[in-house]
Amino acid sequence: MQLINLPNSLTILRVLALPFCAYALFKNGGNDSTWQIIAWCGFFLTGLTDFLDGKLARARKEVTAFGTFLDPVADKAAIGTAMIGLSIQDKLWWWVTAVILIREIAVTALRLFVIKGGVIPASKGGKLKAMCQGFGVGFYILPLPTWAHLPRDLLMAFTIGITLTTGFDYFKKALKK
Image (cartoon, rainbow, N blue to C red; front, side, top):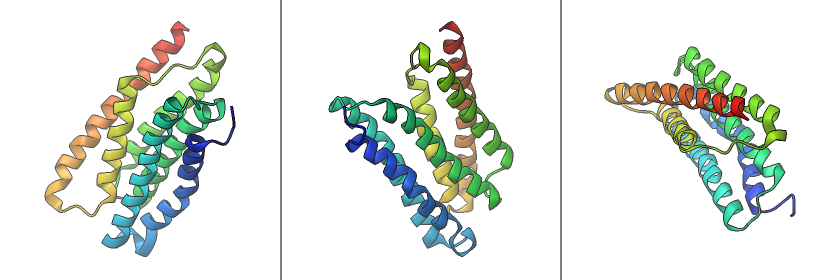
């Protein structure tokens, strides 16, 4: 199996796109609606490559250890880049960023620890968590009207709940292994 294949190339591209996404997020002080939309598009495309690389890897039977390791790292890097950037700009509370990123780092560390015993596959809850994080953070990047802030904040509250719930579930599964 080749190390560099289309799915792995998409994952690498996702990581390489993050500096541009961060640049767009901070361009003109982070308050330029055009650049906010560009930043959102950049993060949306990175999320789309996350969806595509896994589908392609399984469909083409090109799942590699490199891709299995790098894909979740790229996901954490993307969500971390957006959340930290938004928190620096005071658009997202730091405690939200801390809770989500601490959970993500803890689960990633656990994955590395249990990898010899076999990888714990992503659950449906984990996939829902990733989707909610992507959309939730995306709504903080976009220049939304004030009336949309409450639904955005409620989605983020749900996202925090599912992030913590799936994290606890992941640790339970790991302890059983």
